[in-house]
Length: 301
Image (tube, rainbow, N blue to C red; front, side):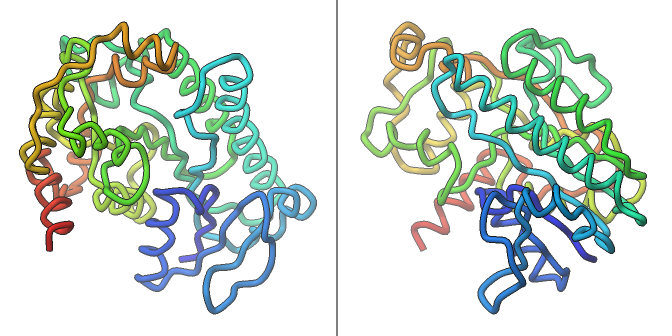
């Protein structure tokens, strides 16, 4: 399979590219810089500028995975919010224009999205058939992001609604571990907010599954089958890391330090991956204990 990956230099993107290459797929990266032929040390690179000028560079590709977008772990001031939203819309728009110009469209586009579309009501679990009820900033971003992705003219579109991806080497999770490493871990705010999460291995395996299964399209929740509250997840982290989970972080402290971005830690969505499991996807790490045990066991070994 020939796969183009936008955002392939980020955390999940790097893991995905490695997995694609390991199974023998031909991979090209779409990025802001470094356009050129494949080298011995990495795949071919296509810049966004090259794609806009010559969409035919994607002629013959079977699939596109779009993970491109500015990190949400930044100040949510006016310029920060605009960058978060516009970077996602610009990437999707560029891919839509390129696909429209191709003689043979890629068979599938897997476009990143977010669990936050469901809002913060944790009274019931949300699957892919649940309504998009979120009214906050992130929910608005996801809504516009998915609406833009719907305009990509390809036979099959998968909108991968991603939870917290946990791994020790990159992403948000290592930052969340810092208080535990300092023996100051504990619940955040009330601790009752839900935390949809997924082990990095299952994240990559699920993307590959969506690429390969022609019967999967539309929203797909990329999160483990057993979501936990923040307090429950923190206790699992403490147990796996052999560190105490005892020192609460009050909401007002977090809001004072991070402003509106504190929403990332103080609120969450209760989501389950009904579509993936219904289509036969098997999670290697269904529980937080299993996922964290693997990560910290690997670290100790």
